[in-house]
Length: 147
Image 1 (cartoon, rainbow, N blue to C red):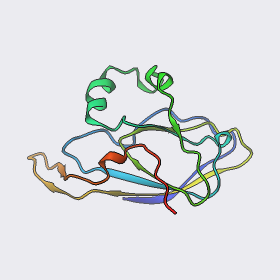
Image 2 (tube, helix red, strand yellow):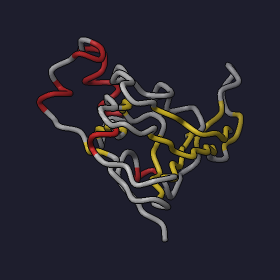
Image 3 (cartoon, rainbow, N blue to C red):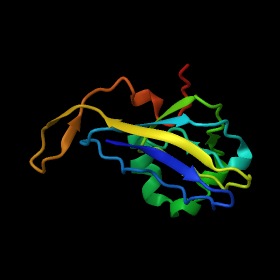
Image 4 (cartoon, rainbow, N blue to C red):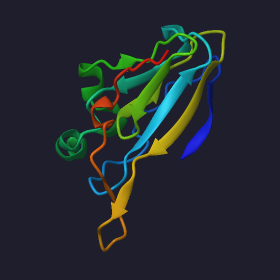
């Protein structure tokens, strides 16, 4: 789906909390893999991830009642910080709520990223793609290191 490098320069502000795609039970799932191009510590503003916020339950029950990216949910439930070592990879469901942190360091924070989507089949009159059962569905927003 996409391939690139995300760069956060020193002094870059924290992003608003967001998901890259909205939850849609009839849509294909998109997953992004981040590969650290250097060690990333808290001062570099690592990506903040709220595990479980990609689920149908969260998106249908909590999100409609929330106050957007400043909702108390995000302070009451501290995020996982994507502090990683060079070469670590993290797989993220793009529906999970996340944001890039404030870069207080003197270094750029760089992550190689690539995305892919699950296979599906056309099943709705609107032309939406139906997600098939995916082995990745339990990974939304959790750290998974490769190598």
